[in-house]
Amino acid sequence: MNPARKRVAVLISGRGSNLQALIDATDQKGFPAEVALVISDRPDAQGLQRAERAGIARLVLVPKELGGRAAFEGALDEALREAGIDLICLAGFMRILGADFVARWQGRLINIHPSLLPAFPGLDTHQRALEAGVKLHGCSVHFVDAGVDSGPIIGQAAVPVLPDDDADGLADRVLAAEHRLYSRCLELICLDQVQLLGGGAKLAPAAATKSGALANPEPR
Ligand code: GRF
Image (cartoon, protein in one colour):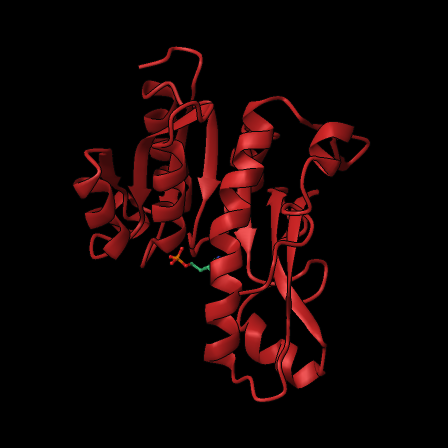
């Protein structure tokens, strides 16, 4: 193991396809991070099996069983610290984290959201994009702040809305873009190419221009 690699925890609630993309990316030689821990708030999350297959430590923390949100976030914080985690990636984690927890991990807590923020925060983004008639949709990776999908944006990938799209078809194409974008943004953070400045995420010039892939990967 390369000791310089950042230790990443991925928090999930379900399918875990973004977790899988992060596992695959971090498995590549030279990637500056490793997925050291996967935490789910649901015992039946499919992503837990992905972590098991990859030999990654897993933990299930169910808020209701722990006595509510404060206890859950306390246990979460303790587990992350015990595991020496540097950075948390939310990947389909279906809970809002409280302001105290978010403040403790500020700048080290990121999320992927399936829309071009600030458009369509919250749920059902693909259906809402179709109803709004936007011609470009996509995904965003952002630092988490105390709001809902409102933190500083690190990277975005645009995906065209096609005339015959339904929400599922559009979601599939956005998801493919998510898988590429998340690992790229994680890599930039681990390489110190992203800075939190004046309420925004500032990319180092080399990172912003290195390839078009961060701002707008080829739609597939
Ligand atoms: C993704 O679309 C992610 O952007 C959103 O929830 C979905 C999770 O999918 N927050 P998966 O569990 O990573 O497959």
